[in-house]
Length: 219
Image: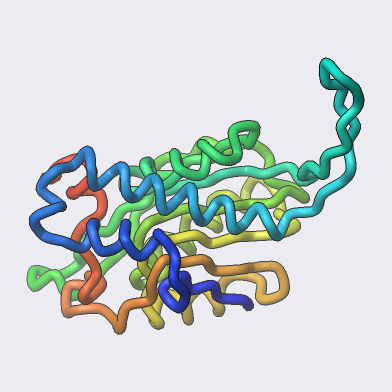
């Protein structure tokens, strides 16, 4: 399984990542969401380089142009609610893609908030059979919500290629994806890989709860 970590290279993604980690910058939800979206756009562009292309002729006012264009059917999938601005970044690039949505959220199963369960409630997706599936979710922490989202999407077919896209991942989350996603057709894309999780299963140093920072706190 191939893992692309953009923090290993110099790009503007690092500037966006610096800003979304900044506790003062985070106070402006609009700017926070905008940077999540822009990282999505950058990752979407990089993923586009891996698609299959064919030459297409198009008439211009002055002649015929020959352009290589993607041939794959892409389904953009995300997990409510934190994934929405990230998803929008991908949709800005793949504007002809079909879209899939699932609600999967964490529920602590103990009073100390150390053990986390994942609950799935809602699914809306086209067929993903023999298509390129991009699952965009900002945080790959334990990998539990990504696994349940993926299994929900599999009820609508088997994709020929899978891209797991996130802003920040952990080694634990990556190892979980390696166990439950097909090795031969999955690639993980992330802006950074952080050292690990705290006792409440939040990424450290991370940047906090992506959903709350995008849309406000929840009960």
